[in-house]
Structures are given as structure tokens and as C-alpha cells.
Image 1 (cartoon, rainbow, N blue to C red):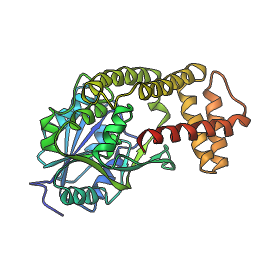
Image 2 (tube, rainbow, N blue to C red):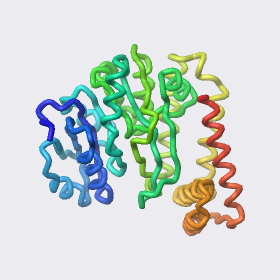
Image 3 (cartoon, helix red, strand yellow):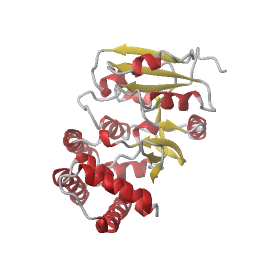
Image 4 (tube, rainbow, N blue to C red):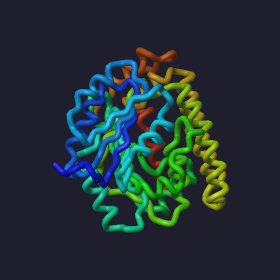
Length: 324
């Protein structure tokens, strides 16, 4: 095993009541083909069995810190303050990094000395680990700016690796953002001299859970994104067009209306059903549709599933048209 005295990569992992998937998440880091890293775990006041599970890890590269709860953004900055690596990599507590993630991202940095941040393509998985959809991330700074100007994140937060020097140059995460802290970070890093891009391969699995879809989170994300838009209009006035803002509002209002008519949990399962239907997995789609109706204020007949799937597919094409 490579010595952890001088790691090249510092992995930032913040956890809060994540006992269900934390072992799988950390195992995916321990299984990386590139071994010169340290994993900095901040337990942000977990009240379940997360901390005892963390204490079972026997690897000198894993450094565990426990604190009173202060939220994700502050915890990420605390984790970064303990980092000794040249690069910072993110990992979320219920997600999975594929074995060659670090190796391929470091290779991209070596081939591109001016690269500041590297993401990767991702797949979205459900609570059982089944793939429900895939996302391609920005390949260069030009695409990054297009994503940001349309109020879409250019990268999936958990998949990124960045130079610590660039992170320090923008003073880390802005702690006035309880959510969407990654979007704000991307906005500020896009102003630096240097490139931003991604490995054109799926290297990260982002787990989407029904518990993560809430009205409160939707409302806070909306407010924080509108806050970021003010910065974007100042930095990229020609890119931050009114039509992009209208598209963003239509999407957010549609989500909020769905929450009101059905429920956040049913919205999650309707969306999962549509994804599975578009993958021609009709049986799994029908299962999710039934789960959606069980928690919906206003249940829908099964015959509406093809329509919902078409709407989701049209929305995805609409989002892709903004970038390409």
C-alpha cells in the first residue's frame, strides 16, 4: 500500500445519520486503483449508528473527526482545513466511486496542467443500487459557463476533484449557502485562469433517495440558486439570458406544483417510474408507479405513465439543448 504520509489526494466526506450506506461509500474509496490518498471524514453530529461504523475502519489513510452538527457547507470547509493533499476530491456518504475514478481523474490533470477541476459522467442509482439514468457533465470551461448561465450545475458535486490551490484561491465554500454550495463554488472557480472539464466516462454513482426530496429542500435550493444568478449576471451578462431564467423557473415551478398536487415522495416515485419506463423496464416502472400512488395526495391512473415518461424525456432534451 502507498504511504499516506504525503497523499496526493485528500477526499472530503461529510456524514450525518448515514448508517445505511456509509460502509459501501467508504469501501468504494478503499477499493480505488490509485492508492495515494487520504480520506477525511467529518461526522457532523450523527445520532444513529454512523459513528460506531466509522470506528470499525482500520486503514491509516482514513482520518475521522466528530463534531456538533453545523451543516454540510461548514463541515466541508472543516474537512478541507485538515487536507494535506495537492488535490481535493468529493465523495458523498450514500454514493459510490467506481474503482478507477481517482486514477483517471489524476491522469486528466497530468495531461492538462492548466486544469483546475475535473468531474466525470455519473449514473443515478436507487436505494438498491439499480441504475435509473445517466448524466454527461461539462467537458470544458465553455460548457461550464453555458451550464451555469442556464442555472444548471455543470458537474455532480460528489464526482469532482480539484486543485487545492484553486479551492483556496476562491476561499473555499461560501458558508452562506446551506445547499447549492457546489453551484456557487463552480461559479467562482469559473472566473479563475485555467480549465475545468471532466473524464468522458461514468466514474461515479449518485444515489437518489425518496427521503432527499422535500419541500423545504426545494424551497431553499430555489432561493440559493436565485442568489447565485445575481453573481452570474454580473460575471457573464451576455450568457445569463432571460430565456434561460424562464426555463429554470418553469422547471422549478413545475416541481413545486407536483409537490403540492401529489407529495415530494410520490413525485420521486413518479419520476423513477418514468425513468424506468423510458429504459423499457415496464415491470419496475409499474412498481414505482404503484409506490407513488400510495403516498400521493392525488393518485394517477396507470395509463398516464407513458405521458409522464414523454414529459420527462422532453424535459431532458430541453436541458441538453441549452448546452449543445
